[in-house]
Length: 430
Image (cartoon, rainbow, N blue to C red; front, side, top):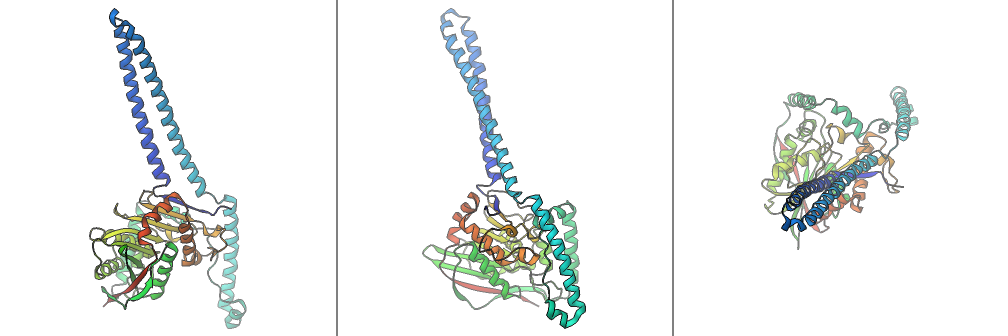
């Protein structure tokens, strides 16, 4: 059975293919036009030749050349038409890949999740009203199954209805949160923790594992891993996701950073990344890769853009992050991992740009056929969790498409196992 995973963008993406085919079709059209002009000129010359007896024998040859030019022009136009039809076929093929899950299957999942959610509510009510005895008997329920009813694409489609009002609404929410946080300690700088010896990630799966480790550190801690070997010096920057949902702690990885970052604006979380890179003593010619999960992916993108004019920022990897509204400099290449059952990547109401430098991998983890699948992606937490994104990253390491293979091949100098040092940077507030 085919694993429900595909990519968009990149050098092998549909947009790149369409651009190449359109360019080729345009060139063929121009060549056909030039041949038509030549055919007309030859036809005129043949006609003129018949007026002079001495030149009359050449008229037949000129007429044949005119006919051949006209026929070649028609052939080139047919070829251009074929190329454009091929471009349309690519679009239809990608649309088919994105619709691999049948409507009947999705309706069945939605119905199952609806009944499952109702049952979850009943269990929750029983635990709440029955006391400790009921809790021991039923167990405290987790999150209800929901991803059959709504996922990335549904969330994105719903929020896209806000249109140009989306940015205004989010900016208003960010302002309200900022006012609520007026009394919390202000971000000032970052301080480095003791350096740890380790081994650098050899692929995307290991990279996601590093992000899970950063998440456990808490307190808005980010980390920079430095590798020094025969190939030179390189750095990998790991950015944490949302850690603080309140308005008093001062942790920059908070709700305000979520709201600001989804619009591509700078937050204290992004400033902490920029400050950590500056404090780490990275040389201007030493390549950098930034990676982040959820909010961390948005912040990594924004920090990459802020650092690109001073440092050699080459790559960004995001997992479960809404990044469609965030721009990158043309020198930075991005790879976005998105579980189609994960709500979070759809919270910006906009798909990622399909350019040669940005590749988006979409994986329907709820319908995964892999024997090593660590989760069912049936709940919000499962769909957004590190375990599922590590499994998606493993598939990308193995090869999903021409675009992902080309992206990883270019990123290989930054993702090669070698002895490394890891420095954690904790925000200083107050």
